[in-house]
Image (cartoon, rainbow, N blue to C red; front, side, top):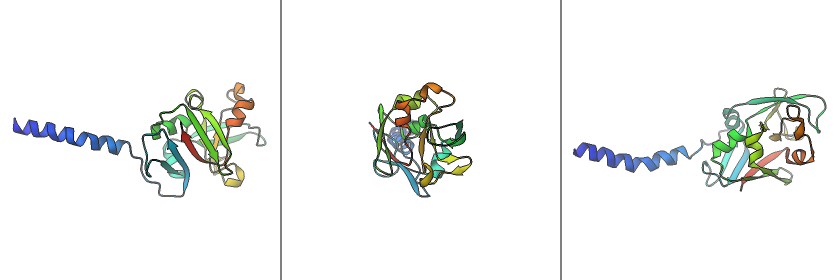
Length: 168
């Protein structure tokens, strides 16, 4: 009886530690290319989630072949689905403030990432995207797969040279 009470006591003592570990992301080993903050529950640097290329790729690379208003011809873009990134950080808000390297900020509804196969493209035609060519991250809607997205609203939300995302 004492052993079962001790086991139960240890279970309740260690349960919060298990939750703490589950809410912590691994540390980036390479150059940080994305910082997420705001209403997130899974972090790895203070109250933020920092990602390098390998961490984003580990979320699962999805490809979309599409034309964009900013590139010539069709390109093959690859990166994690936006909704997988939201799940990875435990996002709890309804709006994303997506900020580019040049300080441009676009408001992107979380429902866009939940309802469409929006990717955070980190590769184009099999190569990592450099800053001079929309990188390191490009919020990309599947324009060819859903032509209704090819309008001013969604073009404005397609931020390139992304450096941070705040969940509100």
